[in-house]
Length: 221
Image (cartoon, rainbow, N blue to C red):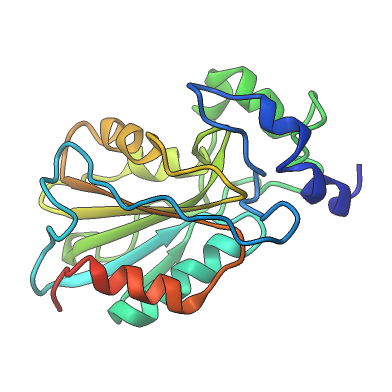
């Protein structure tokens, strides 16, 4: 299956395959059909009492994994708005186009989806950010894969201590919401840090929409 067919089918027949009641969106977070979908409403994780919770002052880091560039675009807008440092997560080895073909039951993502032990073996070229202790606020972004965060992000979360940090998750998807993806990452962090669900950006991306969302968080400067 070529790339164009992969993206076209992402929001159609494979939507019927779900985990935990969430529709299966394109693994790359691409929009199916190119039409703008409604974004998921911002919510909060159990460790944060409101959407306006945040850390006044301190440094911000935006960490993201992106398969096709959509999540990367959102991450870059957030970093500009916050004056933040930015770090891209790169698996080792990285995913190829064939690896991301979830219509192929023998592809890498399909095998990792079916066998959770394979996800545990995923390694990143760099998992611990430079000067990690200096960041008070951390944004973590990812495409939605089978209703949860793309699993390269798991390796980052497990490699770092989030004690004393305020974490905001965000995602991209064809049409799926953020769901429990952020809460599952918070559990992987061992309950350390204050985790806040953010937004899943679906359909056509808009820099203005991302900027407005970041401002609505009222995280302070």
